[in-house]
Amino acid sequence: VPVMLGGLSSTYFHQQIMEFPQVDYVLRGNATEKWLLDLITCLKEKGDLATVPNLTWRDAGQVKVNPPRIPGPDLDDTDINPRGMVNMVLRYGDLASVIPFNGWWQNPITAVFTVKGCAHECITCGSSADACGTLKFRERPLFRSPKNLVKNMLDISRITRAPIFLVGDLRQAGEEHANEVLALLSKADIQNEIVFEFFDLPTADMLDRIDASAKNWSIELSPESHDDSIRRGQDSTTYFTNEQMEEAIAKALSLRCHRVDVFFMIGLAGQTTKSVQETIVYCGHLFKLFDKKVSCFISPMGPFIDPASHGFERPEQHGYTLFARTLKEHRALLTQPTWQDILNYETKWMTREQLVDATYDAAEELNKLKLQYGRITAKQGADVAERIRQARDLRARLEKWNHSSDNKGMIEELRGEINRFSISTVCDKNELFWKRHIFNFHWLEIFKIAAQFYLRDWGLIKG
Image 1 (cartoon, helix red, strand yellow):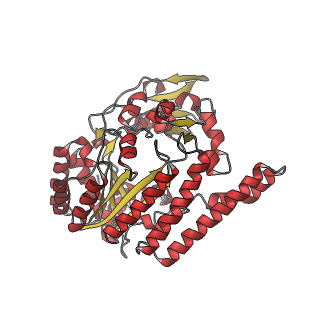
Image 2 (cartoon, one colour):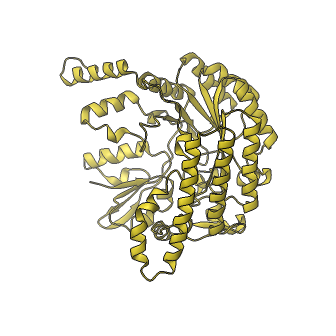
Image 3 (cartoon, helix red, strand yellow):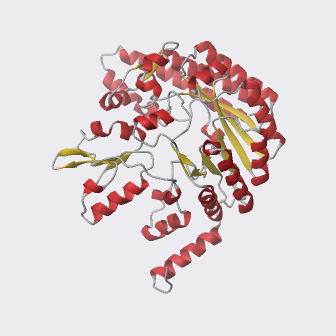
């Protein structure tokens, strides 16, 4: 079975990856659906692999790097067809292969990718505009047309009542593009919860347009830090104050917005332990200012600063120290027993040890605030507090491992605990889940698709 890798990091390390004989192919780029079809067709028909764009492969033991080709002009021909996925399940009798992530049945959210690449310049992101240029992608993002985007949403809504997450800020393609999407969405009359992601603040007019176009909607904001200067340092293309963000949240809540999630990060340039603590204080301010529809989350940036990002390519300029540059060095980090030692960076403001301490301290305080302001149940709060306590205890035991003569035996003994605390430690992951419906699927529509499939399979109908 041929093994192929793809994505941002695979593109960056494509030649180093080919040093591992277990991998046969790497497809370079952030929109490689066309080239994947070319590769599969070429393998099936025993064609010339040298004709497949963006492919890194071996020919008689020699690594070959095919010339890059930029896809375009849009993402419309890479649509994910829900009806086709139902047909795949019926044809192959394999439901597991179409489930997008572990735990999807508990949180059956769907996604529509509005863009590949990004117009922003976050210094730790491997998909920033500059990073995409470094990786030989399009330096400008590649968008899905409004008509195709809404059609995809409509197709999903015919199969399931699950929320539809629009990945990427619609306004990256311009206000006219976003307004056209919303106008078509209004005509589509989709009942599903639609989640809008914003990298910059939505205007009051934009929120009014969303409210007029979607019956059920929520928004996600990523200010990263409460500190305006740190936020500006992370992304020089975006700037807004806390007061402006609060005005936007208030406007959304005055409409039919069901939920506002606000995400903060630990490990940013210029961020200190004191600054992280102040971010948690600001979360309490937001909880006091708004009702339970508003919640906040904070997590460490990890495990790695993205290859090709500003912070990875020019770490000293941005105050980062890197502990891995090559693929093998990153692979070695991933074998370490603690996430402190897995991190590929620290900053001149916080060491790796301080990043871990700041994360646990922030998680504890935010957990207390969520309990105080009714964002989580008493059981959720107690469970998170206990997991953090146990994670701290595990960390202390692993510190002893560093000084133990039988460290291999201790690591094997703690392996299960290490894996267990990689999930739901700093918050209860159920907080990120969306409302489930008792009848989450449109079974009549699925039955119609199944009937058509079998009638075609039996030769009773065509097409």
